[in-house]
Image (tube, rainbow, N blue to C red; front, side, top):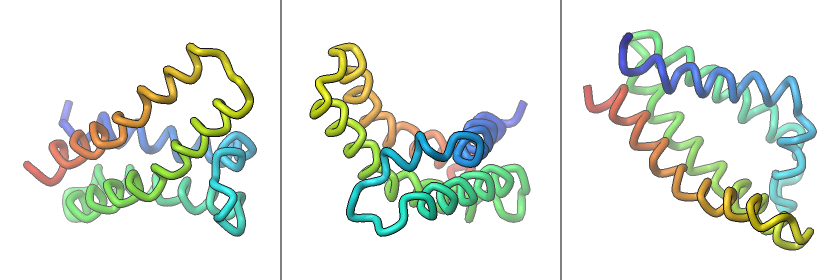
Length: 119
């Protein structure tokens, strides 16, 4: 199995989920974004396009850089989700999970880069 299939599958499934359960993603869009639903759909489209791009040799590197940029762009949503959970007095386990999720962004960036760009 090629190295880029794993990240492609992950981003494809995540992108589809933006259309299956958009309300979940809308809730974590920071309030300074003017249209949460539009942001949800646009990020889902970019995830799906990036996933497909990783599978096509001619677009693999560009798709990888696009996904890396997308991961950086959605980091504020992950931080906002953590802040929302803390404000709502969510369970300690959930909050710890959200804290753990933050450093996963650079690890995902590295995974995409290693699978598509580094090769």
